[in-house]
Amino acid sequence: MNWFNTSAILAAAYLAVFLESHLGGLRLLLGAQIDLLPALMAYVALTSGLTTVVLLAVCGGFWFDSLSANPLGTTVVPLYVAGALIHYHRGLILREQWIARFATAFAACAAVPFLSVLLMLTMGAEPLLGYGSLWQWVVMATGGCATTPIWYLLLDRLNHALSYPAQTEPGFRPDRDIKRGH
Image (cartoon, rainbow, N blue to C red; front, side, top):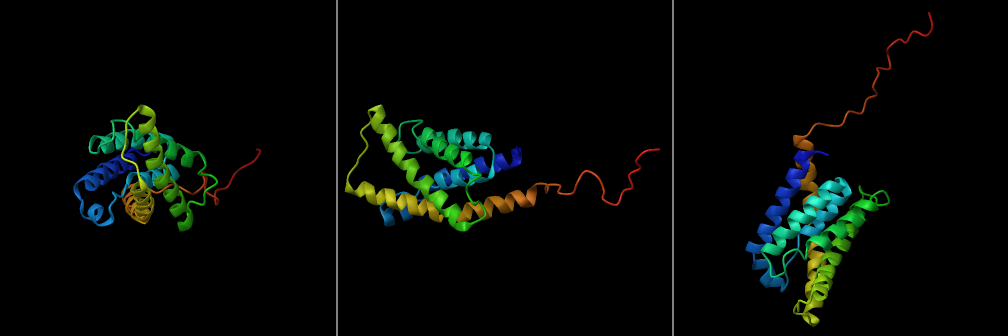
């Protein structure tokens, strides 16, 4: 696991939660808040290890819940479920294809709010639900999905610029003579 990559992802999650809570112009225009964490979770689940998925779910979920009206911890489980499912099936997902990235991020952006509301209803909380909730859910899913290229460009470029490239050559030189026998 690359600790620099994990630190950069957690810093991006912190910045995303901060921007979501302090920039309200788009929320007032669309009538819904765009959630950036599920798209980031989709990126992390496709490119990083399970430890990074768990760290993002716990830290990002608690940061998001501390600045929203959600009970503390309700976003942690849905983020983890989305990330773990994507991470588990990432061998089947064409990670280099943009359409696969969008579809994965859209699924995560649609599942996390739905699971959060389901978890709140299970805990006995009474979230405001109505026909407008469907509009908010659609805006959250498509808006979060639209941020997917930003996560890939920003974090891939940062990881590529500040980490060592993987060594691809074999452990021995092909022009080396090997003496067999005496």
